[in-house]
Structures are given as C-alpha cells and as structure tokens.
Image (cartoon, rainbow, N blue to C red; front, side, top):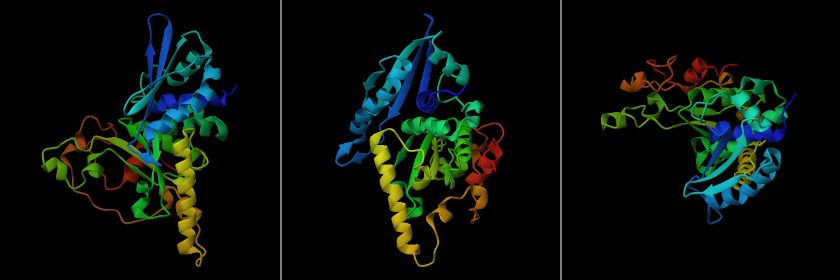
Length: 302
C-alpha cells in the first residue's frame, strides 16, 4: 500500500534537515530545520518569507500527523518540531523507512521510495528541497543568463548526494554538476592548504540542477517557488534570444546527464588531504580531476 503524499513530503524534509530524538517516555520527537540563506527578496530578508510559508507547510502536515507543529524562529533558521507516540502510525512509518539513523547527516533515501510513482517521488523531493535547496541568479552556470540553477546543499553525507542524484534520474531530471566537498575541487590549487588552512575544503556538497529542469518538482516555500518560476522562464527567454536562428533548443542543451556530455577535463595537482578519514573509504586516497569520476565511483551511474 502506497503512503499519502503528505508522508512523502514530510519524509523528504526529515531526510533533508531532520533530527529524530527517541524518548524514554515512549515518545519520539521530530525536529526539522529550515535554514535562512543570506538573501533579500523585494527588500525583505529570506527569513520573512520562510515564516510566511510555515503556514502552508502546517496546512499540509498538521492534519496528516494530527498534531499542531510547533515553530521556533532563530536568526539563521526556523525549527519545526512535533512529538508522537512510538506506537503512532506516523512514527512507525518514518522509523521503518529510516531505521535508526538519528540525523540527516547519516540518513539515506529509502530504497523503497525508488519504486514509488513519480508523483510521490516528487513530493519527497519537494520536501527535501524546501529545507536544503536555494535558487538565485548568482547561481547561473558560467555566468550564462540562460543557465540559472537550483543548488541543493548537503553537508557531510556523501552517499545522500548520490541517492538524490539517482532519485532525480528516476524522474528524468539530470544533475548539471556536483560540487563535491573534496580537496581536489574545493582547494584544487592547494592555495588554502599552503596557507595552513588544511580543512578549508570541508564544506557542504552542492548538487546543481538547471532551473527549468527542476521546475516539475518545485517548492512549497513561496519565495523559492516564485524565484524558480522566474529563473526557469528567464532561462528559456535568454536561450531563445541567442539561438532562435539556429533551431537549437534549451531542452537539447540542458536535458543531458553527465554520461551524455563531453568536455575538457582540468588536470589538478595531488592534494595532501586526499586520505582524510572523512572521505568515504571507496574513494579515500584517490585523486580526481572531475566531479563525474566521484559520482561514478559512488554509484550515480547510467
């Protein structure tokens, strides 16, 4: 039996930025963080727009979990949290899917989800993106006005990056680029290392997707959805301005998985931190010149 769309949306939020706290009282607390990216939209801080969207989220989730989700707003994030009995069907369903992983830093996308209908996969990804993704014009690929992208940011959790990429592939959405938190990419010339900052590269991983490609998933958070619509439309307009004579299409250029693309690969020097213990064992100690090489080795494949 398939779950409700609300369950998939909630599960996406938890996997994206959630913490699960098991209580001795026979209850389980769920905490979800919605970060406020440093961003101003129409003269207002992003936090204002997140707070305005919390009502939309609660409208979706409160009736489903039969609880009034509590909200706490801090300077750089909004926290959503609720507590359910361990015997509650919502708790049982979430823990069955996620096992004993207590935080998003160790969670994986349940394999069962890959066999759900596309509509439910999109609900999961929408919840995931609401708490992990941002979109702004400065994210355009190579400064191309028709290259606006969504960035999904995932700290620490290498395999979750691959899970998300593969789930997007399942609904025919290609990843344009993955900026891995790996020394070969985040400190490729050893500049920071030579300055004594050996761990400069330890940041979040970034999955980058063209705006119009991500549009079928979208967001519940209003300012993100509004900006996605604007920049997806801008991609189309800007592309057509320059390519209306040659018949090339935006979809033909952007709707390509990495194994369908070719390009020059920049040779990078070896980095002393390639053996760092935080790098997954299967790629630890290896040198990489392209994000595609890591993606392939970790399992984002055709």
